[in-house]
Length: 141
Image: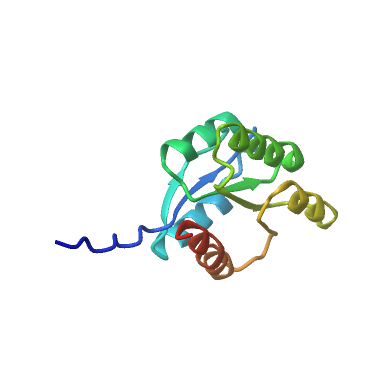
């Protein structure tokens, strides 16, 4: 009796709003676009700490975490999530995000390990396509 290869699981993404920022419309739009494209999405809601986000990502066996940051604390919040993922042995979880993030900060975010940052006005299909291409490839590797 031979076993067939398991069907590839859908990509699982945790979409999170870290910190005290209370504006979540963009995060909800992205979460819905990903869900409508067949991605399993866990939306954490507002005011999540980096610790809560990482715990959710690990508990949900996420392939990626998408952070929405509009508060200006993006450098600190992305760094803390990446640090906690590393400490928990989950550095293979892809971290991407978006929000009001100055162009000058993008190289430093990339250097610290953020896979992609989407700035305001990015079409949702571009985000979906990127997740499929980069997280999907990562998830099946």
